[in-house]
Image 1 (cartoon, helix red, strand yellow):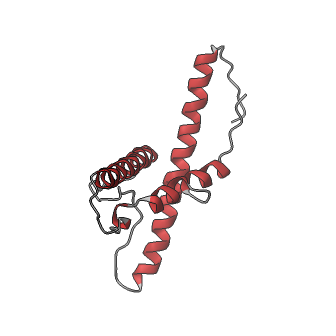
Image 2: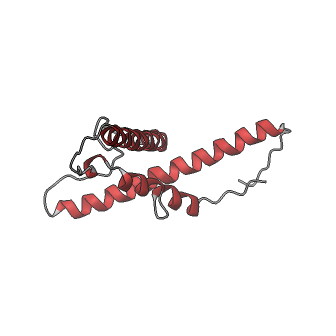
Image 3: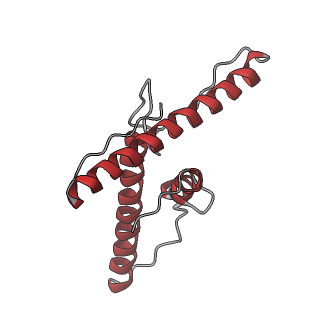
Length: 141
């Protein structure tokens, strides 16, 4: 309804409340978005008698969950960023070692280890986080 309840809060308590509300809004919007995508995929796959669904899966496929959440998306995004940094560091170090030792190694296609597409899908200008931010603007003083 239209009832208002006022409660005095410290700045820290108010920040926790604001962050909790933002997390709840993001989480519900994320759940709705996944449900909409899955409903559309089900409609498209009924004609082909196939089962498709949208899920959050890390790039190397180590985790599969029955229900995906915003928290899992954030965890997997963090893992992808860490994996990206690790890959860059390892490949750069290997190339530097080869150069310093005078070893000539043919260029290797490392695109199988490149997860830029996953990072962009989640955090790019048209990624999931950008869409959530556009749909749930929060002003913070």
